[in-house]
Image (cartoon, rainbow, N blue to C red; front, side):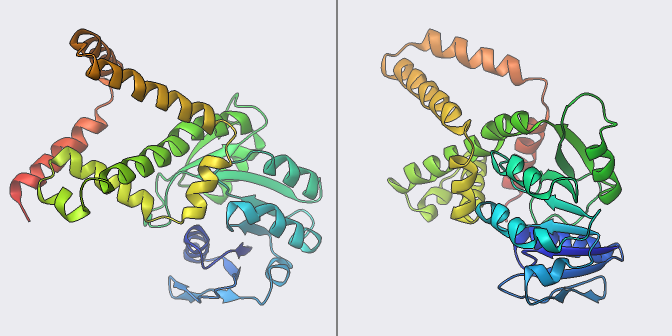
Amino acid sequence: MKVAVLGASGGMGSFFARYFLERGETVRGSDPKKENRAAGGRRLAFQGTNAGAVKGCDVTIIAVPMEATLKVATEVAGELKPGSIMVEISSVKGETLPALRKLVGDRVTLLSIHPLFGPALRSTRGMKIAVIVGSTRGSSRPEVALARRLFPEARIIPMSRRDHDRTMSVVLSLTHLLNVVYAGTVAKFLTPEEFMRVSTPNSSMQLTLAEAILAQDPALSYAIQAGNVYSTKVGRAASRELKKVLAWLEGSDREAFDEHFSRLARRYKTDKRASAVIAEIYSAAEKGP
């Protein structure tokens, strides 16, 4: 199988180039950076243009910044092999996905996915991938079957376009928003060094998460938040939640705070992941460096 990866020098582009190279496929790359990478003893072949990279390929992965997805797809649409597969991986589907469907028509199969992991992932076994389908009913949708053919070790999660963006407004947009606000608030009072010198395991974990968000491309973070039409509603809900809790604290309303805290604790008590992570952090803190 011949695979083209557009944006092959970027984070997710390099991941997919490596993934298909390690599977023994022939992979062509295209990217302004043109960083030639090797995987499994095989080297990625860079082409001079996106259009040149996709010619004759069975699969084309569009792994460019979200705002450039439609532009690049339009650029290569006329060069795509009839009957081939075009895979787009944007974190927000919005109106881009309908435009892509209109662009390729029936000539090319469009597979819209969202890798729910970062480019640093080393083992592809069990990786989570959201797959956009016409309906979320059943697992025999053609989009799901195609995704399983390309990514046989992945955990496939079928979602409609709207359900995907609504869900990501909480899972991604809210996480980015809160951590940017958290980091900005900490910076008004303490340097990172002062913070970490007296940090507790919980606060250390929170600052580490904020730093992980800030280590990403600001353009990506902005697109994840501003590009999702559901993000504003979720962000305003978070703002109301903060104001409510602050009102209880400022008004010394211990009873209301306790009731709210306990209700949330009961809601999340079945999820053991957080407890396991916190236990691991406390254990590491006790052992010391």
